[in-house]
Image 1 (cartoon, helix red, strand yellow):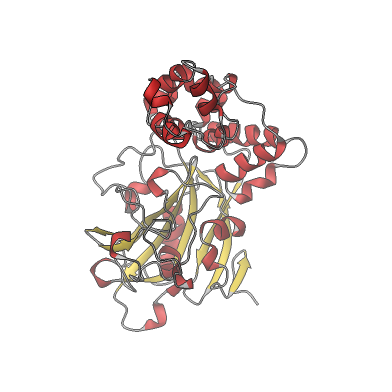
Image 2 (cartoon, helix red, strand yellow):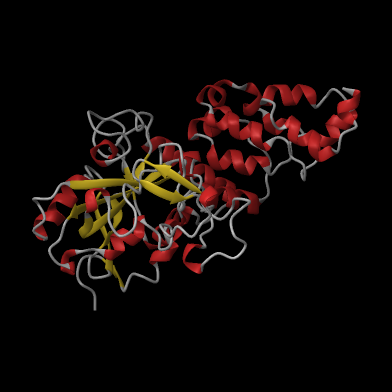
Length: 381
């Protein structure tokens, strides 16, 4: 122990960050030097153990160390921004001892966790009250069929002519498959199979897109904005170094600009920063870049085509699905995390509104590519 404590504090902090949360708490009280190191906000060896604990369902539900971490002064306060952004609603509302944070810190927690459109619930009162109120709404809706707080559910449709509509349907019995089938009928596309893609998953909701793929005889039915929404412009550009790519069964995808050997100056078309407001879960941590691990299935093809050389035709419907306890269980004999597995079965019946501000947050590159934003049905003016 004596030799270990003579090492640079940065190295000691890195070693301590590999411990589990319970062990780190014990270690922090063994000596004054260790106590000072773990208490230093700039070193912060707590972040990795906290993230590991949050990603473990067993620890999150049962670890007393995580539940009551706020009572320990040795844990820097800003770690709670991470916890309040990623922990489950039941853990925060029912188990955790909440810390005393400043108003701007509660606002940051809100912005990291929820879609921008949900700021409509902040009218009067503190950001802590708004955060907890919205979290209560999410927790309630994820366990019941109640829609009293949101009678109408909004969604976005990207049209093949470059425009987009913000539409809405009754929240009671909201069925995206039925709505999209009506869209296909109106566009003479009923003969095509509905293809469904998981765009990105957040802590409480996930963004899903419904569309159709075909081999069109002409470009008139092709929807370039549907492809651009799922394939941000430049993401498929393989100018990234070989070490910054991952090879899958469906293609070769760049992992993003945050790796050490990425070129210092990258082409503007692929200069995307990782989304932080709201913050995606670990399965989509690199979004809008590709995230390895099997959870990111936006890209079942590369370049201008999808799997089997198909292209997106007709409209693309974008919705927000509330995560329920059974959402991640397989819904049937379908491939996981794509197509009908995303919308059919237990735990996939609750939806929330998706508006323009939410679309710009998850796909900011679309704002300049949509030629006309239309509120409600119609072609616009």
